[in-house]
Amino acid sequence: MDKAKNRNPAADLRKMRRIIAEDPEWNLEIVPPLVDVCISHIVGNFGENPLFEELLPKHKQNVLKKLSPNIPLKITAPLINDESYWERCCRGRWELCDLSEYSGQWKRMFFERNAQETVETFVPEQSDIFKLEGTLQLSSQYVHRLRVNQLLPPPRDKAINGDDDDGLTEDGTLSVCNDHLNCGLILKNLHQLDELSLTFGVKNCGMNFDWSLFEFTARDSQLLANGLKATPTLRVFRLNRSKVGDQKGRLIISHLLDHPSLSVLDLSHNKLGDNAGRAIGKLLNGHSPKLVTVELSNNLIGKQGGVSIGHALHNNGIVRELNLRMNRLGDEGTQSILKALQGKNDSLLTLNIGSNDMGEASAQALSEMVIINKTLQNLNITCNKILEAGGKLIQHGMEENKSLLNFDLRLTEISQESEYCINQAVKDNQDRGGTR
Image 1 (cartoon, helix red, strand yellow):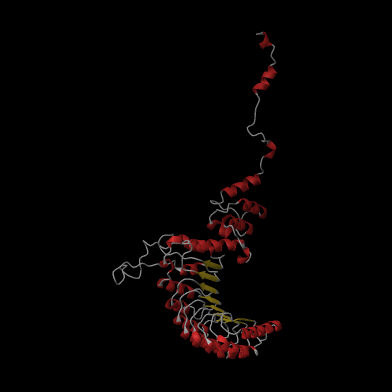
Image 2: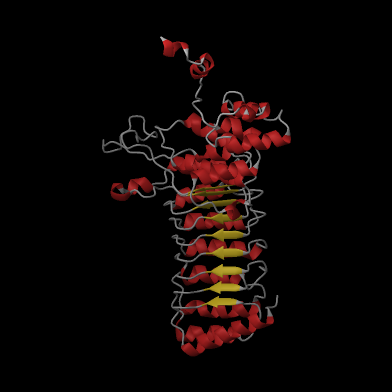
């Protein structure tokens, strides 16, 4: 009792009122400013209430720094043009980002690559077509070039031929159809598209490889042709490695007649034949006012197609580059093209007729062409059997040529002496800078 009486009441009171804070760094002096609280609230609710245009510029920057790149595109696409935000979106999604391919614009890179992946992963009869159209519509203003490296066919259990009422062939077996995505939808929704590259096939199919995965169907060709005709602003069109046959190719080319903007047409690595070659001839014969580059390498164009192209070149003063490497022109088809370059044509700068079954019989026409033509600068005749006598004729022609700056004649079986003299003539032209 005596000890209790002698206690200091104030000391007991201090012990009772002692408080230990849970956060040792807590301090009244570091309460966040109201502006920061508001910005955090805006960022956290941006998906439901995208408040952005009403903010001051300095506050917009703070919001953009904290904004998630995973917000739906329907919200960010029309609101945000800041390149730093789209750079974060690109780097967060793709490991390699080469900005030089997209005119130095991160927003363009994001939307072009996103559109490409959306199209390449679309599975007919399985994927949501409305989601695809929505993505393309959101991307319309920002996509100028689209390179599609694969177009998937429908699942095999759903790939029934829509052309037949009962899905059966003439012998009563099930008719399988591999119609791909309607490419007209791409062209219809991407209003700023300047360049379109397509490949109908499957990448990395591995052990599931089947030739049916690489079939370009009649419906594919019709829908694509209609879409191209309805897109007058397209400047570059490439359709490669898609097994495009002769008639399907002719259909596509016929829909490009009188196209007002097309400047580059690339149908390399397909199965185009003489019908497609004749259609190309018609296209070059005054029916394509801006076409300057035609790529047709690795096809099946024969002498009739070559003759048609040659006749068209007589009247064409626009095309600058023509690539017919690895076709089947033969001497007759090749000579038709070479004779066209001896006449009125003064526009063609580059010609590739390598690997075309051209022989010694074409050497005379080639020799006359290099003498008369003052425009052609690049010529490739590799992998043709010109032989020694033909090489001599070309050598004599090159003695008077002043314009060729590159002449590739490897694997033509001409003599070393002729090859040396021709290359020396080309070098002399290069030293002079060429004449026209």
